[in-house]
Image (cartoon, rainbow, N blue to C red):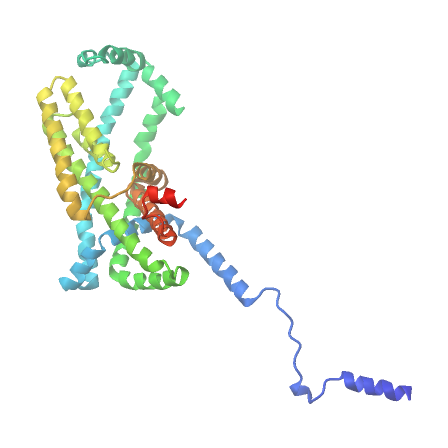
Length: 392
C-alpha cells in the first residue's frame, strides 16, 4: 500500500498535459533590456564626446551665428526664392567677406604693431628709458608718475623684474612665446574652416534639426519648452547683434578716429577698443584714456576732437542703432558679461570672445524665466512692499 501511495504522489508531481504544452522555465536576466540600452546609450554618448570634443568650439560658434542670423536666412531662402542651398552659400560668402577677412587682417596688422611694442620693451629693459616730458607735467599726479616710471621702467632690468614678479617668467621667455605663437594660426584656421562647414549645414538643414530638437525638448520639458524655445533664440540674436556686431563696428569707427588723430599704432588700439566694447562701459573708457594721452602728449586739439567724436558715436549707437537692431538694449549685467568674456577666451580662445557672453546671456535669461515662473506661481510679486508687509 505504501508503494501505491508513493506512485500516486510521483504522478501528482509531474506536470499534466503533453510535453509540448508545458510552460518553459524562464530565468531572470542579470541586466534588463532597458538597463542595457541605457548603459549602451551612455557609452555611445561618452565615446562621442571623447572623439568629437575638438569640434565642440566650431560647432558651438556655428550654432550661435546660425541662431543670430536665422531671420536673414529665412528671408533669403523664402522671400528672395533662393532656396536652402542658395541661402546657405550666399550667407557663408557674406560672413567670409565682411567678417572673417576684415577681422583676420586687423588681427594680423595689430600683431605686427604689437611686435614693435615688444621690441621697445626689450630695448628699454636693456638700456633703460627716461620718462617722457609730458608725464611729469600732468597736474597732481605728474611727479608720482615720473617717480614710478623711473623705478619700474627707466632703469635697466626694471621691466624684467616686473614681468618676473607678475608672471613668474622672464621677458625673453615671453618674447619667444609670442614669436612662436604663429604656430597656433594653423589650428585657428582649421577651427574657422570647421565652423564654416557646420554653419553651412545649419543653414541648409536647420529646419529639420530644429524640428527634432523641438520633439526632444517637448518630451523632456513639456511645461516649459514652448517658452524656452522662443527665449533662447531671441536671447542669442539680441546678444550677438547688440554686443558683438556693435562692438566690431565701434572698434572700426574708433580705430579710424585714432588714425586721424595721430595715435601711434591705431589698429592695435582699435582692436583693443572693439574687445573692450563687449563690456559695458569699455568703449568710453578706451577712447577717454586715448584722449587723455593725446592731451598730455601735446596734442590737445586732437584729444578734444577724439573725445567729442567718441561721445557722439556712443550716443548715436545707444540711442538709434542699438534699438533698431535689437529692439532695445541687451539687459545683461556687468559681472556675467565680464565672466563670459574671460571664461570664453580662456576656454575657447578667440572664438570664446563671442560664445562666452552668449552662454552667460542664456544662463541669465533662463534664470530670469525661472524667477518669473516662481513669482507667477506665488502670485505675490506684483504686490507693493507695503502690502506684503501688511499681509505678513
